[in-house]
Image (cartoon, rainbow, N blue to C red; front, side, top):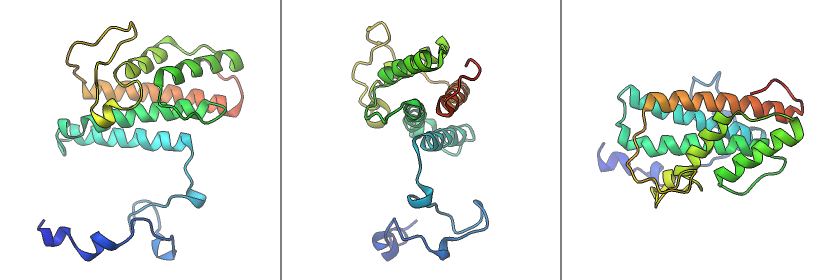
Length: 197
């Protein structure tokens, strides 16, 4: 694209957030005009946002696997989206909104809620996976800003290696984690015990 095609009057001055009108109506999600509504009747909640972030992470990983984008160009973005999805799922289970990004604290609180209110044990693999994410990115800054600093593992020891992330394993592991957490949160939000995770 030329600079003239990039810097048009519309791209520089048209508002990003426009009032929703009948001009935006469409038959289904695949027909035009392509766009989405926010607020009002389309107000997202914590659980629905978690699913949006999870879907976006999967789309990025699929784009890498299909060679539409290089892995190094969107790897941190995919990791951030997966991590944030997990954080929001945990927050959806909390009785009150938590203004924290502390994944270890949220995981511990989730385990407490499951045990105290629902007499359910969160499987150890879920706790381990959440704390594995927290060890690399405890407060949601590493994947967003690239500020890994000196991450710590669960034993409080520095991680002194370059980490490799297998895309197929990442996607499969996050699907398993997402499926388990979404199921557990649905049970918690419905206020019943349900089957063990």
